[in-house]
Amino acid sequence: MIMKHFMIKQFNGLDYATTQRLHSLGLQVGSEILAVRFYPFHGPVIIQADHQRIGIRYQVFQQLTGGDAS
Image (cartoon, rainbow, N blue to C red; front, side, top):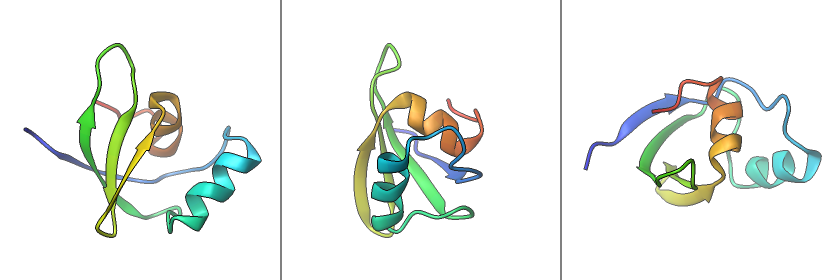
């Protein structure tokens, strides 16, 4: 399994609740994340940040990384 490093570039375009939840999990602009698993057909993306794994929607992942996915 190939894991790829990404950096959170922005929270623009996300709704308030999603942004707050991600902030509460410790994710901020500039945070390094590791994409552990991409599910097919733009399914969820499993990321790892600060030794915790989080499942997020593909569209949210795209917004966070500025479209650098896959």
